[in-house]
Length: 78
Image (cartoon, rainbow, N blue to C red; front, side):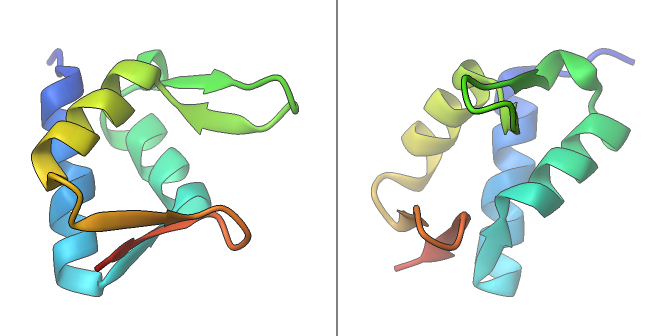
């Protein structure tokens, strides 16, 4: 089964809504295992990160209601 960036973003938003926060490390693991490696890349710091198209779709979906905590590496419901 093939997934879209929008479907991955919807999963991320539902996780933040239900848990209040979503750690990037947990999201990377889940996305990789359930949606596929195509949505994960290694960034310039050598860390696994979520595809830019997924993050773009995620921002569009949450409309500013989710904030990124760059110190703790998680998204939180605002």
